[in-house]
Image 1: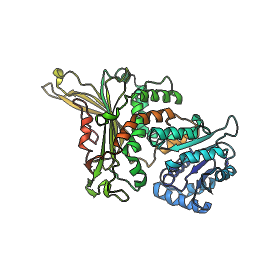
Image 2: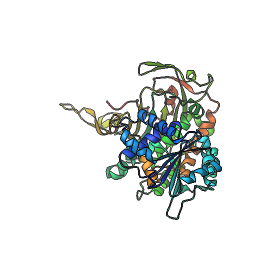
Image 3: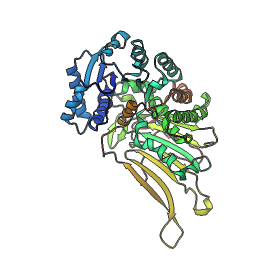
Image 4: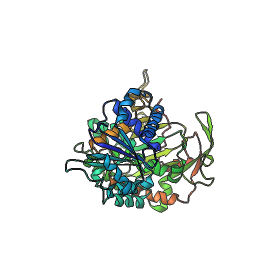
Length: 478
């Protein structure tokens, strides 16, 4: 076995996350020559031998990697070991055979097992780096907690064993090129600095719409819902990137401090006013891309009386000098009219008497189906009259068909380097739960509004919009 570099241990190595996302990302990094960890150890309950584990990985790599190369795989698999066991310290101690120097432990496990796994590793002594210059890191998938109370409980469970500097809470949205470019675009282009405030910006809309349904995730999703699955983590992080103050340097702690400041400044949502700030929806039968699909309650495994929301929208206000009075709208839903995701910033309109009402600029960061930056401008139409027309200045960033790479590659490289910039800190997680906790409480016994599959969401979403604002359509500018 190649023993150079750190040891990368995957707990839950036979699970869905590992086969679909994590190991394909490791394989692609290896092919690119970027994977600098040494041995990879799969750890799971299944009483498999190494040969069966390798066959399991190969079968799924052929499914999830478009350009699978048997020769590259033959080289990579020489680094792979497998160990079966449970999450007790006694069983986890078997990993000491493989983990002698620096190590990364990736929890590819169901969320309810995070605390048990982290504590088991700690009790087995695997949390301690081999020297003052070495490291041990813990990577945790979302969700980090189920609500504010459980997030604090999980944090308390980790604290005796794992320092904050060792914990990497992975949010794959933060590994996307277009998402990372929000910060670069904001802070490297001086022309934006003078307009990035409430004097010039009217509203911000952050949308993540999917045509997909449950895709086999019903056991998790029916307990989670759209608010926990998407808004509390993914979209809340995108929101902080738009609203944060400029950092003095590109430093993980400074970035986390500014993001946490934004979340602390978000106006609390009173429990008796949740309907003014949040909307829940659940899809019924309809057509998506001309194909008939069942309603949520008719999906396999879902209870006929389920009140889980498949659509969630929030209106947030940041009570600080920069954003006073500017509404931020966040929404995400399943079985929507299109697969579309964007961060859209609308500047305030010019005086109506000058060229007409409603003429404003948009700066749009598109994340899917294609990655691009759009700037909506206005100019004079050719001809004798002084009429205006809309101009869309588009900078294509990356087309969806250019590669099958995921954001996991970038985040795995960051973990290997120990760069926590793209990994939320615990106080960010805690503040995000504080914001949504009243909504979770109000929705606990409330039936979501229905919306037909293939639509743009429930009609009730419009009540969140202030004044003349309306939700942007689920498509790029035409």
